[in-house]
Image 1 (tube, rainbow, N blue to C red):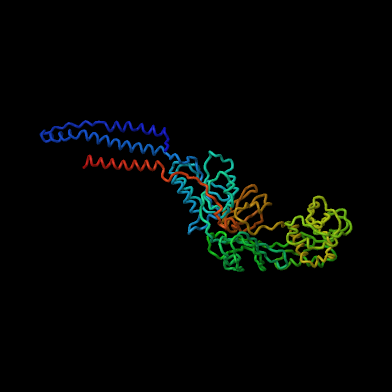
Image 2 (tube, rainbow, N blue to C red; image 1 turned 120 degrees about the horizontal axis):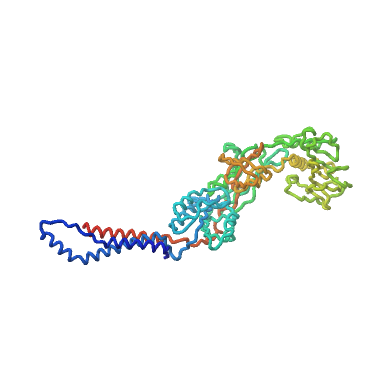
Length: 595
């Protein structure tokens, strides 16, 4: 056991006044008495006991000295020689998986209780700080040796619905030294294998691997560019059960009273294959996908999606043979009205064959040109027709080709040509001749399709109206559709990258904040969030969608935490000793002077 020696010596100097006071003799007050024989026997007995009384007084003094020394030593905060005296940082994992129930108690509560036990074991003998960690590290107290302050900081930590971020831990320990504070993470280990590659961390495992949870780990909901305007749903689930379980997936619109679909699912252990289906009559607004089951983690049983309203694109057709072109637009002009056929002067996108005069076309309209011919600023070195062997798609994720298959077309009537400088070639022949490309000339956006629709029977292909829709929505400036559903923990800039002026963000709880383009804004609350930029507003559903959180596997986490301190500190035992000795001296004092 070691002490703070300077404090000990200064404390022991206070023994000198104590000893002096104890041996100080108090002279009795003289009083006259009427008879001496009454007092003679008393003084004889007192002289017989003088040696014993002096010994008894010295023993009492020794007891008080022991009490005083114990109190001074406890105040010096001694520690056992085997204990570490380095500062300690307690990192409590409050990610989504920590909401998992263990025998009716969440893992987060178990972690907070374990942290409180560590603080109480420190007993003010070691400096400590408290932080929570999920997608970032948040400190709730600075380094302090006050148990009350540390316990209050632990109590302040609340649950979240965001996944654990190994990048946050890696950044936190960067620059750490061997002599710096110890970093103890109290976690269930749902971080993958982060514990094996982030050095400088000690891990204390919370929870167990008992089975009993299913969750939605991927979900999406998008309108499909087909004539009947269906909505496609993509959903993937995972299970930590040891056996397959059958669960109903309920699909609601707006409220629980508007049940749209029940999908029975047989969920196997692990991550299951994706489920894909269509909803033919899907209204705009809020949609809920809910697994009808009570398991250990509730956050991943529901996914939220917002289906925005359709805004039709005004399309015009220029040319003599307009029948098939008009029908391709009309195919999307019914029902939800993806496209709307208008006059060329009012159109946002104009379709035309070859190189027709565009006197009737608005100068602001974008162009979709089939079967290029003659001279034009949108191509050069136009030559004879060619035979296309294999068509190659250079960017399969581009909005112009995402919803149809260019490789399934014969590309009859294609001509050898050269795309203008700066053009974006999306489909090319085997010799590099552009077959589908996007160009810009003096501010006008143009898409050129290098084939003859009549030779290729393209008018009869189901891909023809889809191509028209894809080009029309892309050239009209609608661009990529806003997401209907995103996962927690994402930065708003990941799905609103073009909002350089910033956004006004309203959470499901009704809290509103303004975000600049350079400001990180991670989404953490489950439910529907609203974003507004100028006159435009969007809603998006936010769900957990994390397999590492839903599977709840803690077996990969290997504990490596070292002992923090002994359960009872030396100060505790010294204080207890002082109290016991003081009680003994009080008993002796009572017997000596009272009884």
